[in-house]
Length: 353
Image (cartoon, rainbow, N blue to C red; front, top):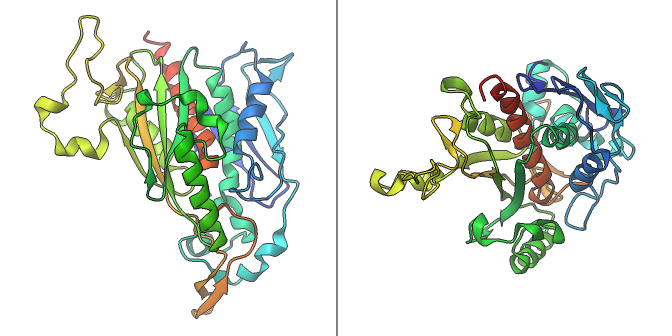
């Protein structure tokens, strides 16, 4: 299986399966001499871990990171940083019923057809549990990029949607509710909706919005390595993501150029920011903002039709511990992937800036 590495200079390779001994990763290209805040890494992992509230999967994993290399006396050495996140609460028997069947909208069928074998326990490598390794790398990447602030939050659950942009919100409220929505009244409505969906044995999708502030001018490489292109790739690589838009996004397609152009101020900043902080694939110093759309979780705790390995359509009910809505736990994952992209381009920029 190829495609387990992301990045060019700041590079992450991940390994492990949902029900294997551990997940893990190797971070290559992290500069030497960075004094790592291990508590900050642990905090990011706590934000992503399962079992943190009643509206997420009840799998109990502490997700404690064990660093194996690349760190000495609390500082990075410049050599590859190896780490593992042990799996301690697997219940593989929950998946024995899908050993010979393929669930709709999962990777089951295509994995088996492509590789001739699949780990059906929790989805194996296709499980969103793989993202634990990304959060470790993202927490380190945040410490590579000085002064840049990345804030992601839930802006929609199903049809319940924030009608405010990030400038109208108090982003300090993101972690003050289980949904991670900075509008506390709407967060309660979202939480109630998720709980009702969960009672039905069903799932619901949502949207995570992200804003990146204090970005220096010059991150991103023109043509094929545009900053927004790499952010899009990073977000679309996250499990369950179905869409990415930055700046004015699809709404910009409805506008005239005279309304969409961001006029300059004398200092080079712009009066508006419909470009989303990126022009010509390069950061312009304005805030970068984007949205990431997540589909409903494909595992339903209700009966649905599945395909078995003999070509029969049969009825089957999902089992196990699953998120009724992924977006609350996806918030730190979105931040992590954004941080990895920015750290990569930041290391490139040191050649030019």
